[in-house]
Length: 400
Image 1 (tube, rainbow, N blue to C red):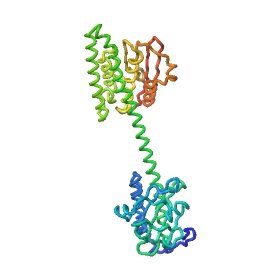
Image 2: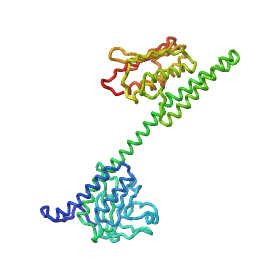
Image 3: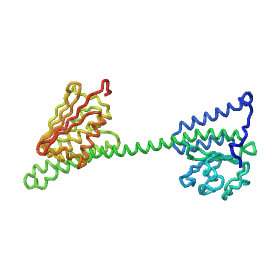
Image 4: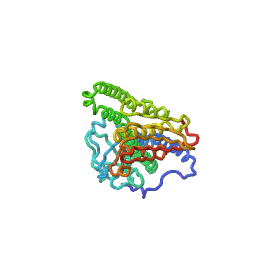
């Protein structure tokens, strides 16, 4: 067994022009490999690229990269120099015994002239290609071992040299950064997926689910109307059918990313008018709308979408909880601010009780107002209706 700390440094003096010429292609190869690895983000691609490049750089017949779990067992084993058919013939992953386990346990480099002669060697499984010389190097990240590089069968020499070891250790340092970055990228991707799921759930709640709930409300007293006023019952059912058809359209648009006008976000005033018409069309209440053509909050399409979903949530809450006869919506400019107000003459509620009941709709509206950069105030009292005021100050030069 050779300890790298006791090995003499081999190679020509730094002033030797032949040494400089031979070092240059090696450094160029390392630089090329590191740049290639830095450009790959998928963890599987990174691992395979590391193994392929380090095998070439060290002139090894075979190379592998093993990732060990907390218990020291190899969980992932990437190879180079062995074709897929040979790999399948070998069978299961190594168990981290023998020399592979030695690198895992001790976390330092080993150069061994003959695997079979080493006391820690445990032999090879059936169908495994013969291997002689060995070089094992740990891959570290923040001082912790995250993997190991294994190279066997030095080409053109009986064993790996100290220069090979230094080269692979240099490469392993860059490989540790590459693996760490790939893992961080995978974590960021998972976090983005989780955020998108949360957004989709919120959007479904704010839009499609609320529309269906409104249809259900409009049909609740249809059985009574059938005996009292069959004409009114028929009108209510027809309106509900049309609302359901609109909701089906919204679902299709949601799935395919083609948002309807009411949640498009590119034209805020037009979107508010569309939402008001949608509510009015349901036949549930009277809706009054005042839209100042000069009251443009100058939001991006994304923030405009947030605003329109806030409006939809407010209107849905009014229908579900206030049962008003009249809802008024206004978007006006006051000084440097743009003010959105939504008021109803419904049953009202106690704002102090919102936190205790965990009212999901109000929480969503406050969250959306924060995203927009606006200030949301909700004033209400039992029996006195509800007024929502969103104050926005357009940023100078904001894109629309």
